[in-house]
Length: 326
Image 1 (cartoon, rainbow, N blue to C red):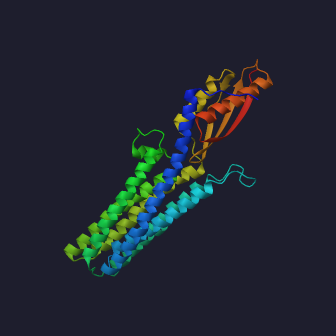
Image 2: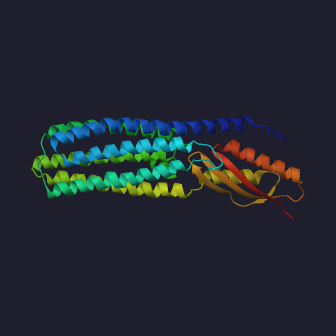
């Protein structure tokens, strides 16, 4: 059996990748638990505030918190299900299940968060009722903004800590991320803070003008905000569910590993597919030098696989089609 000796630098890179993988999974769960705790507490306060004040915008914000809490449960369920290994029924494992539940989260934000908030606002416009106890609404909204801000800070810090390139900006990192458990929570918390600002403005305008339609308009605006957020998340998670390739850096690295092997004569660009955040499939079509024996080609295949797995621990499956140049 061919034994490969890892250089200190290769071993260090391997250990770094392993730490990165576990950090990414742990950071996603940390962000989700922090957001869930904030949303449950804030949601209760919002509903109490809505009941006391009669504010339509406050009620929409309460619905927003309920939807976000349900979303976090679904994300945690998706992470748990995606950890299932391969078996006869699922030969490639169940990693894509996280992407499915992430898509469901985006749909729920659209249908429940956005839809119900808009309907609530439209109903309040048709049947306006003067809100009371605005002071309660202000206290609840300010407290909610503090807790949402803390949850967002935790989410961003955990997300950045899990990135392999901390130098890139947050927005670019979210665009490139394959881990919906991390970026969905950030988007949700950011939308929640904007929604709170809209609700605050609606309550304040209704109080200062005596016109409750401002409160109803704020409810509609919150619903439209959630609809826009949901649409963006649907587009992102749909791409992950359909099957996105690994990052350009990963593809270039794998191509370089193949090219530098002494047994390789030529190779097509690697085909990569993210089955999950840390589950990448790689397919390679390699032409080996014609002077090599079958045993030497077999050894080269094992050597290339070992190097790829050492450098990229998220690569779980490698399929190599090997041929000798004639």
